[in-house]
Length: 476
Ligand code: NBP
Image (cartoon, rainbow, N blue to C red; front, side):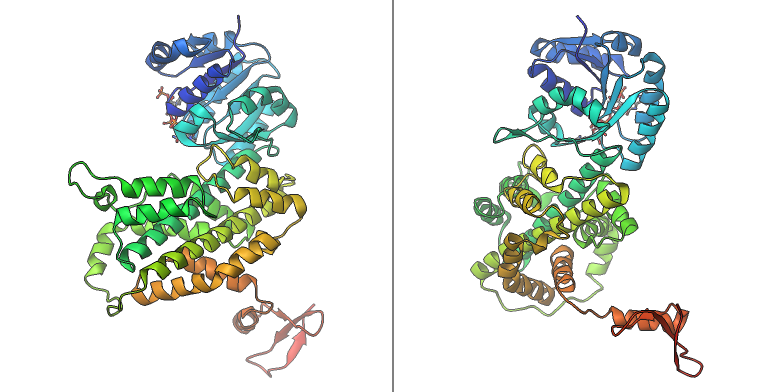
């Protein structure tokens, strides 16, 4: 009997996705470039379901029902192109290749067009949730031809996380749209994590609290508005004792953050689109600054900080930081969703932003209670420009703003870096102002580059002859 679906690439993600499919009753053919891994997979998990292990790509292709569905779960980048090139000559018209790795969306657009020329259907699907999610139910963001999605939706919705009877999987849009949304998801994850790190920094270095004490605070926060996977695991990580030293584990972990690039892609794309995406971008920069460990060590004995400040009211600090964290998080999501809206308009994707929040409710790293509020916001206002403008979020940030401002002041006075907290607040203050200071920017640009300006009291573009007679001339 031929298999319903095939998975090639049996590292942790591919292996777990294949096991998840088999557990849901699908027949699965598995393949890996290095055959030993395929054999090991069958030895370890063969008893879990109806697997067919294939040693060669030809055997793998022959083991599949036609039209074939092949999930490629190899390292993002060149390996995906290599696998497509090897598979294509073995496939028939109409077969579906699904790239479930973390591919960059322009690559997915390119591969979609390339496969279409070969008569093959290509789908780029975002899969979030790490190895645990892949095995037990990830959040799935499928992009590509809707008809092809219709043919594989039974498998994808069955293996996805499920919240209140709704699978965390919905067709996102054509071409690279699925990988685009996965990219923004990862960007938001960067912002969420940076905000958590800043909250921890403040509670430790202004509040004087120990890691386990802060862990208990996060545990409490996880029962309220902030309830989410990342807040939950922060409590667990902070509570962990190091086996070697007997102290908190976090205290002996080096303070250099690494990254695989999806946050950087999100920030670069926002710059290309012209969308203010300060939270995610600051989070990427904060990781790059953390990586300058040797420079920071030298600077720590050279560059002066503020004079020591008197002790703070710790209970008040904890509550202020909680509110600042929530408000900044709302801003990070508002920015990420504004970016997806801009990309949707630029590419004609027609993204359903409420559905994006819905498929992030389970399985993925940024799963959180408040995603329900985002879904509701887009259901009631499909053309919403900015999440901050719906009453729920307007009130949430409005109620938090006094605490948020106190946190930014306190951190600044104590010399604690809070790039995400402070830039989110600046975004809020910039966004809510009817008239900002860009009038002066335009004046300067006109002075040095004759770039012209518009007036508030009428139409037209104007230039002042600054270095000649000082007269204003209309230029359009
Ligand atoms: P890796 O990203 O570590 O990739 C290893 C797999 O790629 C192996 O099966 C390897 O085969 C195969 N491969 C490579 Br490398 N080059 C190949 C080539 N030229 N031809 C054929 N196969 C090739 O695996 P992973 O950590 O399971 O991640 C898979 C994808 O899922 C990535 O895109 C990743 O970014 C994404 N992702 C990962 C996570 C996570 O938590 N790890 C979460 C979400 C998404 P070999 O055994 O023969 O070397």
